[in-house]
Image 1: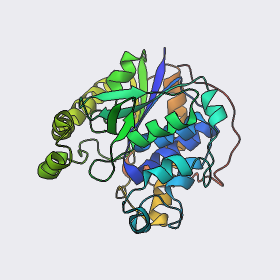
Image 2: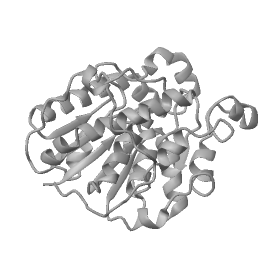
Image 3: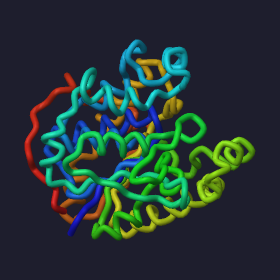
Length: 315
């Protein structure tokens, strides 16, 4: 059986995913297929390059080094400076191990929404550093706040617009089962409904009518993904992990709150580690513990860096 790992977006809420993945990496659990969407793309990078703690440091960067916020608006006239995140961080503040990434043997893809078609397209890159970073920039490019990113003559924005949780795509890629890391406590709470911004979206993307339509249909597409996730979970073909405590805002800047959610992701994965290992081996997943129990974070990482090994989960 082939198991895929799907990483939902959520901007700063991706710090929860970082905690989950750091605990997996400490235990040498790596899946043969990974798909990152929006902020999940940044998490996918550090997971495949086996860099424990890198994404957490990046998301919770000091305000002087942060790629979003008032400082960036003053400097580059954008609330979100994705060029800093995509092309500066990997070489300066938070060095990225391109060599390990490219030699990982993991099939990793990033979901991007094509402005011309309104459909999700999935990109991977196994040798060119700049192409990889351009792809990651594209999947993270939030509508209304970021410019479309050009790839191979077409233009792309946030992958979560067309496919927030690419479960069907993972199945189409040959996965029999999927591990899904969500960033909201309640899957029934929809993502940003861009239909509320129809006038703004229609004006900003008047040259991309298919993209406008994709924005209007986003919530419906999300709900279809959730229905498929629930079906697979009931069949024992999906292992889902999501926050069990109130989450933070998508652009939270309170370092304490951000790291609290990181620790929750780490300790929640620690509590469910045996369950995941057994599920990897084909045993059914148990029902997760209640919110009050899971909120009692006991196992806290002593430091971000940790011992790594090369076990590849084949289940």
